[in-house]
Image (tube, rainbow, N blue to C red; front, side):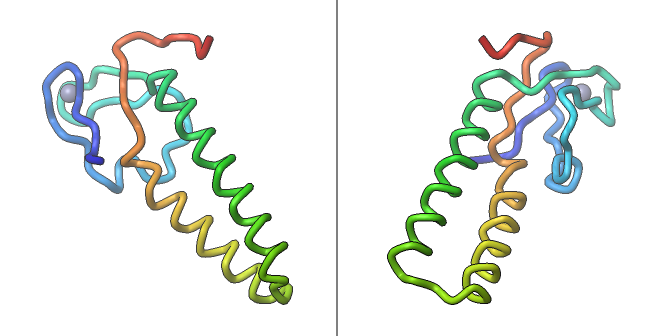
Length: 99
Ligand SMILES: [Zn+2]
């Protein structure tokens, strides 16, 4: 996994530029072109979140975790998912529908 490059000038996006990036379009700081998150990386992001939620629920169910442990581990999973999100982003030049 690596950070995506600008599709127009090839400049690599920095980690912090993509962290907490929630919109669908990202402007390159160098060439100012806008690019869009590709439908497959969007889908992949949704699948990862779904996977984590299922894993987390199953884990808590089988381990029979105490509520405080449950919330603490949930918090760390959430932080981990946010921290990994810039690495999952891929861009396209045009906005494409998911389906
Ligand atoms: Zn650029």
